[in-house]
Structure formats: structure tokens, C-alpha cells
Length: 500
Picture 1 (spheres, rainbow, N blue to C red):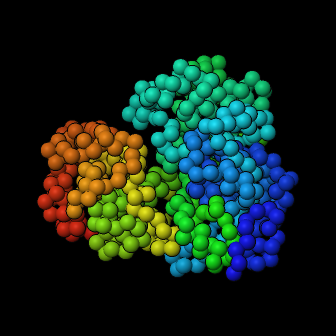
Picture 2 (cartoon, rainbow, N blue to C red):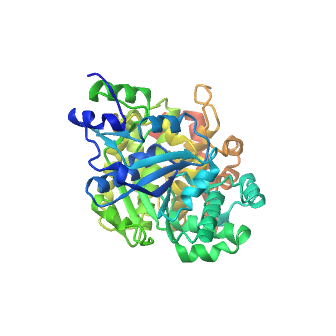
Picture 3 (tube, one colour):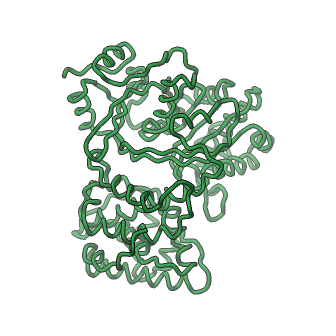
């Protein structure tokens, strides 16, 4: 099939070929939602939900995307050439795929090169929702002090030059100050980033920043901004050339901005937002609008994200580079489903409407989806930001409660072995982590100074002599992996529990 370029002019022809296309008038939409962090995940998740609302006539607003850091590829040019349209290609584990053209994004700019234009959009009275997927590290939040990491260079800069911010917190504060002065009205600021209590932490970060830098703004934010919590989930690897080629070959569409993802998705959103925009309508597109999001967050972060990390580090050391291939290894599958998930599940609260056994089984099926091309290195990146919430906090609870946790300690030891920077054959391991140098130095001494490693990675305090005991358990795992190798160590790891 001859590939047809995706753009507004060709939409009807693509629809005539059987492709699902937007059924609404995009020119009549207003960009009342501004999204910070226009990456793959947002386009596979929130933008797709808004597209569904638009197709059903339940919404009249589209999305304007803004990135705060320079783009690594000509995103603005590509998106503009395609009239901000892109194909979302969801694939299930059986290989069935359902491509659809998403039309909910109406524009894009990069704030690193166009800061004034970005601030004008964020502070416009028409903007009713500001959503974020900027990753946890972009918040500069110190989980120990429960405050902004004020000693970080970027925050030091923003404190000295608040009119030229580098951080998302400083940028939001400046935009909200402009809203206040304009009388632009209330706004919902919706974090969709992957950490517990994301909305509360975003509000806390902004309040801390404003009390120090913009004291007159803090009361206005408390009165005029809502910060709902949210839990979002959809495995979305980076787009590859193979996906773009396959899209043209199988579906006859040329699209440089396509996104591939799994068929599963979930969005749980707190019923807390300013009424200027009907976010509650998202419930009609499959979003769960609830009063308490935290149980869903803990379930997802500790079971999905924690299991992703627990799988990634031993899998990489065993030579796996694809997630599906790793999840198909009987030894790794046993470790993750029968040991790790069962132990970490004891630190997951009851979740309304969720059967945790079914949820765990579904996670294994999702990990095994070979049709989305997820990579082990993607899961292994930024461990310093992922592991504390996903593994260390539940581990502290298990230790404190005297609950079995050997598989969780093994996952931590595997991370330490990964952080050493060399594989079992001596080959270099690419470490993509903002704290790589500090953590690598601590990991190299984890066998002799396990307590120091636990401190370096941010292990929460546990009472009495339990921390010393945990350090010795970690030492034993690290020593075993060093002596016997990762595969033989996995074989010796624990006895499977009765699945729950």
C-alpha cells in the first residue's frame, strides 16, 4: 500500500482507507489545556483520552504542548508539517493492532527557545488546565526533607533570577504570577508524573518556592489553583524507525510523529479541580474519577514500577535487552511473579474494585508483550528517582513489620551490581541516571559497606537494629551475585509463595 503523508489535507483520504480519524472540527477547538512535557507517554495516554471526548462531542477544548528543555529532534517542524496530527498504534500480546489518528493536540512550542510565548499561553485566561509529564526528577523534590532541594544549582539560579527560570517549578510560579496580575482566573494544575501524592507534592513545591521567592503569590495559588492527584499507566516505549516503516507498509500512512504502545491503559484522577474546565467528563472516556487516589498510586508504583526495576537489573546482567524476552525467561518470571510481587504486595493497601492477584497476573502478561518493543535499558534508567518510591519505601515497611522481603533485597543487590558499571563479562554498562557517579561509587563498596550504600540510595529509617540486619542481608546478596553470577544467584533465591 502506498504511504500517504499524515496531515489535515489527507485526513479524509486516510479515513477512506479504513483508518480511524478524528470526527470533530479541529478548527473550532480552543487550546484550553496546556501540557508541559509533550513526550511519547502524554500522546499515548492523556491526549488519547481527550481525543475520545472530542469524538463523542463531550468537550470543545484541545491541547497546546510545551517542552521546557531543548528538543533532541526537530519536534516543532515535524508536528507543524503534520498539522499536529499523529498516529497512535496500540498492540496487544497477540499482535493485534489498532491504529488511530489523534487530533487533540492543536499546537506546540519549546519554552527553551520561546519563553515569552510559552508564558503567554500558560497565563492566558483561556487556559483552564495545566498538566505535566516532566518526570519525577524535574520537580527537584527532596523526599527526606519533604521540600525543594534548594541546594541544587538550577533552583539556586531560579532564586537569583526568577524572571528567567530553568525549573518547571520556577516556570510555573512565573506563569501563575502573570495570571494573578492579569486576573486570568482559576486553573487546575494536574501532575501526571509517576510518584506518590503527585498533586500534593507539586502544590508543596510551588508553595515552598513562592514563600521564598514570590511571597505575595502563595496565597493566590492556594485560593485559585487545584492540584488533583492522578495515577496514569500505559507502557509506551520510544518510537523506532521500524514502527514508522511498519505503519507505512501495513496501514499506508507516512507519519514521523507516530507513537506505539500497549493496548492496556489506566487513569485514576482525583475529583478535585476548578470548575472552569469539566475534567469530570473524562469519566465518560474511561477515566476513574475517585475521592482517594493514593491506594491506586501505591499499587501501580510498587507493583508495576517496582517490578519493572526488579526485572530490569538482573535481566540486563543476564544479557537481555528486550523486556518481553526477559519476562519470558522462566527464572526471571518466577522471581518477579512468585517472589518479588508476592512480597511487595504485602506493602500494598486494599484498592477499591481491584483484585490484586488478577492485577499481578495482568502485569506479567503486559511485561511479556513482545509487540511493543520495550527495552530493559528504558526500565533501568533513572533508578535514583524510581527505586526510592517503588522499592525502598515498601521495603522499609516490610522490614519494620517483620514481613518476608528477601526478593526485594535481591532486587536492590541487582541494582547495586548494575551500578558497578560493568557486566559479568567486563563489558561497560551504560548508566543513564543523574546520580550515576555518586551511586556507582557507593555500589562498588556495597559488599563491604552495605549500610553506606543504603544511605546513599535513600533507604528510609527503620527502627531498632533492623537497619543493621537489612545491611547484612544486602551484603550477603551482593557477595553471592559477585561470586556465583546473577543466574545462579537467582536460582538460589527464595522459595515461591502461594500466589495471592
